[in-house]
Image 1 (cartoon, rainbow over the protein chains, first blue to last red):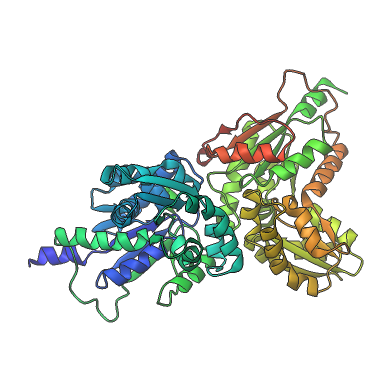
Image 2 (image 1 turned 90 degrees about the vertical axis):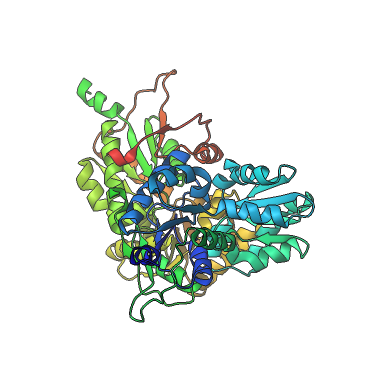
Length: 278
Length: 278
């Protein structure tokens, strides 16, 4: 392998999300690509994207891509469902780099998993309204019926740490009962926070419904993409090097607290970036 | 009264909030000052402020004040507890107009209401951490003990319309049990959404605890302030004039939907403002 190639492979992978939720994607990337350097950007100053317009989400996403490019990344993971749903084309255009959103890998996994062609999707209002999962799934599996449901309380419940709690279970029952009545056999957890509530959601849905975690599928898809391009890093990271860097657009203790509850490492801090300058 | 004076009195009152919650303040202003023109600005593109830093909240608030000044307002109501807690001095400096936040009137009412000098405050993380209610109350009633509690799920529960619901009551029980144990006889609802949950909060606390609604107290305080300065409008608003104007920083249907569930009038729409230009 040429030195130039190695240089390229050593570069980091940029991951961004509207806030802290994308850390579930970061966690899957850590597991699936253990030799890669990862840079996380959480737009904590402007979270949430779910209630914002396509125009705003696109503008924010472009700014973040411009910031990540200053860190010389080799690929970008759009860990935010809303941004993946609303702005992936514009992100690719801005990046001129391999970009992967969480929507397509999740859609592909659901189409492969369903036996009766009835697939449920849960997410924020914006993700559900955008109809992006329907669009992707119908390209792969035109015969599939898709049933969407927005679950706005799941994010705050996950952020309060009520991952397994009677209140979360009651809310999940309300949100999911209509979906269950449709006879779905597969459910896409179409919001980065939702895997944290996986056990509760699974209990409400019962064993016959397969849960698809787009975070996990995205990590696998990125590995495939990087392999195909010969961009996987296989040089061990030096002992004294920090392989993971975290940036936020606002200094909130919440980020560190939440990150430490999700990731299997102690995060000391995140650097603040004035993202509106990008 | 001179024509010049009348001109001045005819000007609107500007009200702003990080999003939709300040509409509970708007509602109290409508009741308390029925002849006034009101302009509402909801920063729906950048909501919530509660998890953001003082620096960010101050910058956002200054931009909104500059926008409201272009609408030639005669006074500004900071309907957002976070902005009132973090940035009221800077807002006054930027505005050079009478400005009133929701914190001081709420603190004054609580100090007047308590019999045993034990006052509870509930709000967002930012409001509670800022200690602003303690600071204001201790100036008026140095002997009062203040007990604060952040209740992050109350806002999403209110926005989901679960104003009176077993789930909200269960969450309220968990949030408020420690406060009840302290023996408080007065509780400040220190977040604009919370008055929507007033019945549920009241049921959990029991009849012995007085609930203070800063929205109501702010409307009364503003009326007093405008009276003192001779700025109250007493000319009837023309039949074909729309006395209430709504602006948002992002076009979200959610605003109209939520506004219509709170205000006793049909809101057809809100105009979008590119607030980052101000």
